[in-house]
Length: 324
Ligand SMILES: NC(=O)c1ccc[n+]([C@@H]2O[C@H](COP(=O)([O-])OP(=O)(O)OC[C@H]3O[C@@H](n4cnc5c(N)ncnc54)[C@H](O)[C@@H]3O)[C@@H](O)[C@H]2O)c1
Image: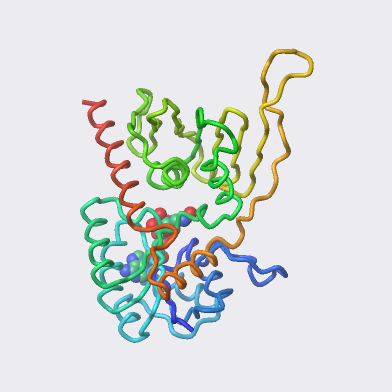
């Protein structure tokens, strides 16, 4: 069994899983439940300088060895894998420490960093020490979304025309999930443009433009920050695809002909079905474990995260030019 530890005891690392032990059909939505259900990794320790969170986390996940300092944990616990769940601005320091203390794999929260320089150094350090890294863009381990990707690549829906991706909260917080999805589905855009109506550097409206004239529009929905909305609509020649509730529901509707208005092409709306989203962290951990054993790159590698960080930087640059 690999020895795993979590650095930062927040929602995504384990506290979102408030009903885990009551659920009969156990599934993982956090790092902790991913390790709990894993057959190859054992969560042996967590750390957080916030005493209340650490105690809550320790009691909920029934852990014995907890620390207030990540270096102390790394020194004492001889971990094989760590999850990095600290605020994004602290990823770099913790990431470098984890590698210097000899871990073999890192499951890092997204975005990897907000600095290209840091991300490049993280990539170099991981490569030099042969450490496998996976960044938690969790839609990549949603098998229904993965199947959509294959259908798109195999041309089953016809040519891609346009995407409309909507998000609440911030560009680096929520839109980056959608940007990663766009890069994963369609590769890098040839151009990125900023909408003139963007008035907040952290909540931008922008477009990804592709060589074949298709495009994806990213629209921020300004709202109460507890309203979490990260949804996509994709228009293809012969299909309309909608991914809602952060990847939990999908609808795939053919473009049909209107039975009443004879010559019109319409979206023949199909009921959404529940996507296979529930065990994304467990699958990510299994993938990391496999990659450590077989020396393969992970499903959400650093390289892809660096592309995304460059895109975030480009958007900030465009915004600064616009407000000058
Ligand atoms: N994948 C997702 O959908 C998703 C969802 C939520 C958050 N996140 C990401 O998770 C990360 C954390 O985000 P958050 O807003 O939930 O953070 P948070 O501020 O709620 O929690 C971070 C925790 O890390 C602890 N911490 C800080 N430095 C530490 C250190 N050196 N060692 C140990 N613990 C330390 C803090 O005390 C705090 O308890 C961010 O990168 C964020 O983008 C991802």
